[in-house]
Image 1 (cartoon, one colour):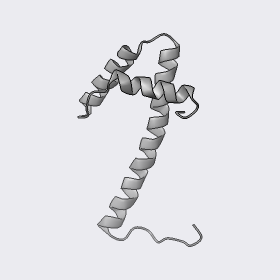
Image 2 (cartoon, one colour; image 1 turned 30 degrees about the vertical axis):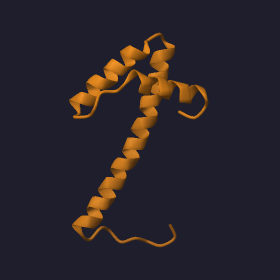
Image 3 (tube, helix red, strand yellow; image 1 turned 135 degrees about the horizontal axis):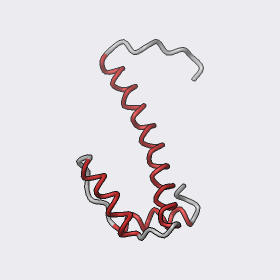
Length: 84
């Protein structure tokens, strides 16, 4: 960015900047989650066990269950060089 941007002046501008920070934090968390999934799988944890742990955490946060197929997909993509 070549020009200086003034500090946020309105609530909407502050909300936009806060939302962007959350997006970036989420992207970093996604990479870390994938790394941990593959590492746990490589160390012997089964896909159903990983899915159950992810589901428990997801549901605690108000999210949906994580399927075994989703875990399988993450591991497969990592093996193909696309996931990490």
